[in-house]
Amino acid sequence: MDNNHSYLFRPGLWKIDGIYLDKNEVRHRQTGQLVIIHSPDLWTIDNQVNISGQDARDFVTRYEITPFEKDKSYTEWKSLTGGPEPIFGLFVVVEDCIMMPWQSRTGTYWGQEVMARVGGGEYLSRGFAFIKQQKVSSWAVRLTLEGAPARDDVGEKAGENVGEKAEENAGKGDDGEGQG
Image (cartoon, rainbow, N blue to C red):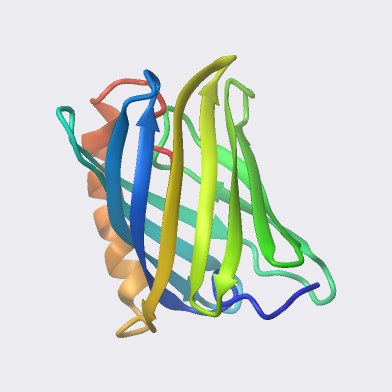
């Protein structure tokens, strides 16, 4: 397994900038940040994204990740926020890429994201989300490492914000456009 990845394998604060395409293929600017926190039994990613445009939205998602086992190139993750229903997936490392297939427990909501390393602290992310056989979103963003989290409890504080934002997002429809 390629263990030279800075994304996911090291705690950090990442800047997100790129393009989000909604279900009608309308392009929107996507900006935000994510924080990766490691504890011995759980890694978390707290992701805050802003989609600009006429229907501007903020999405907050928390990913809970089982730390990688020694000599394994994959692990499981789950997210209980950010979509129309909880999602479960894998992180699979293949050379310079981290792939993330995922789906809801019912299989209705599903997608894929690929993170391609372009430098030590830069990744290109490409992904999509579907509900049944209808595409609801896709994205093309650049992630840039901004530095280490300021304190070990950043994830806990972001997690509190995740819960608040998830409740706000719940009333915005079940179109699944929060992924990404």
